[in-house]
Length: 564
Image (cartoon, rainbow, N blue to C red; front, top):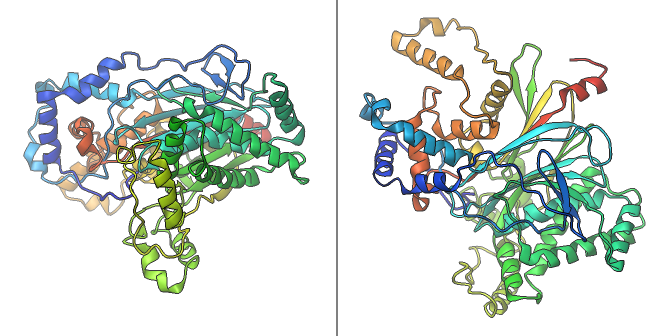
């Protein structure tokens, strides 16, 4: 996530120069394609575990295993990243002949890079409790700009309660916080919704050493990984969490989804903070905890049931609903708001938490204390702890980890007078599902920097239906010059072009990075973006993570009396 970065435009002549350099050395792209010869490998599954909170799943099977015990992370694909490109200096390559440049090979390499983290899962017809599933399938993908990628994602079915959880997490200051949150937040939410009897089953199993009933069925991509070295710590704190729920006289049948989401966000952020302050079982575990606390992550988590969608958002990831209107056209319904200084309500909320004397310094240059773009996030204890606590934790941490190597230094933001300045309290939204609600897009800000919500919904809708609606030529457009009419026709032709990707998340990423001023997919621009070395990519684009959830339209129509 580009918290401290600036938006730099990439002209088409720059694209050409980068592409030329990439063709001469071609080390970045070719190394990725050679290590990912299988583009649609099924999800990993495993044998049963004697103590398991979770189950992993592929499209054809599921098997239970202990939480946070996924395979070690394989080598990551190319990481690169940009903030929107302008298309100036187009005369520099108007006569450029793609076909005669040996570009076909480059295209195959581009496809390998774009598709390396693809995931496509058709969800079982019935959920973990035997009820009909509101989700038909979901498709997801990630493309890095940072090395390693700082975004994370999650998808899981709640086995002890109703519904599915989908999340996108945009890390900054490293991937450690986003990694921890993506692994743990779904457990906290699912546990908070579980009835007292189910929580007692978990506690009895832990006390007696019997197999623990699974809480979640995970849907993992083979490139996704977990902090296996911290699994014991995570289980311990999850157990403390459910023990406290059991002690609550009001828990009963479990918290409602909005209460569970809100409580889980706050509790996990508190646990991340606590774990960095206390002695832990190993230096590696302590190092991981300190990194997770000092790094940060935004989060957008959706809980989907047959009744509707609850979205909990903290930061600038975004959830957008795709609605198909009666005339076949598409409209975008926002289910979250970006928590940045561009959101007037959010800016007022942050300023109200501090003295009037800090009004001009709490948010400066559209950043928290002039440094951090999102105004809500997990971790980021530099914006939450006192100076004294920060110094104490870093001094004690120096004995177990190399702070210099982890880029952890003893400093505080300017004008740091009345902490905390940041929290992870989510903003909650509920939407009752209707037959015309076709899909949900969850994405990190790397996508939204390049595509508007309406354009993203249009691309997904047309990919879903294969129908490319064109608005009638308006009276104003009939008065266009020949040159302007040519541009209009190019845009229309581009919109009607067939999709190059079966996975709709890849389709969105391709269009986000490769669309030119005519609305056409410019293969040269896309190749230049993907060929940028990792030390430059972050200047031009951001990590991008996209998950598109398709709803079970037949179920929704049945629940609404067969209405369309």
